[in-house]
Image (cartoon, rainbow, N blue to C red; front, side, top):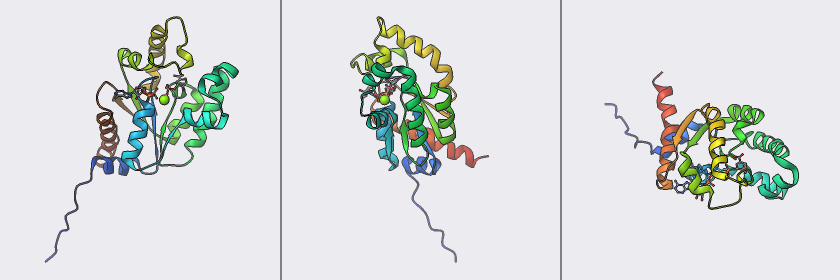
Length: 196
Ligand SMILES: Nc1ncnc2c1ncn2[C@@H]1O[C@H](COP(=O)(O)OP(=O)(O)O)[C@@H](O)[C@H]1O
Ligand SMILES: O=C(O)C1=C[C@@H](OP(=O)(O)O)[C@@H](O)[C@H](O)C1
Ligand SMILES: [Mg+2]
């Protein structure tokens, strides 16, 4: 008689991890969407390394993002961002949280598309504004009407973010809930692949 060995069902994190394989998970979206915070927790859940591209840019330049913008301007910042992200995506699997403008830059977007599975953390203006107006670490929002600036960025960028592989709605729920939704979105790519 043959005995069928029953395996315990995979957890959501295990399913997502299997779906990711050796690819990197790249979080994209506007400032305040939660890329840095949710990225870190998602990496923990998946048991893989986490890197925030802004943090890495600050580490290699030994300057804050604010000082980099002030000293060299946005164009130089984007060039450095492209190089850093290209390098970060060379090995995987990792979770890489990008700065909000990274995916909007054509060259950086090419590297991201080649280097990983992208998740867009999408959020309403009110959610983003609530979060970003508490801090002044974002040079692009140092304008006369930062809320309007954020709205303008939304209008310009959302069509580009929409090219992401997966979209998860970021809102005011527990961070753990956001992580679960990101994991579920990744895991769904495996189930979909399996049913083809
Ligand atoms: N689901 C959430 N609920 C409440 N606060 C959140 C949530 N996700 C992120 N935040 C907070 O919002 C702020 C901006 O998040 P952050 O991860 O820095 O966004 P991003 O990297 O996309 O700009 C942080 O203070 C973070 O702790
Ligand atoms: O949207 C942008 O162009 C930027 C977003 C920031 O990162 P977060 O999205 O993590 O705030 C940071 O890279 C820089 O201030 C520029
Ligand atoms: Mg961030």
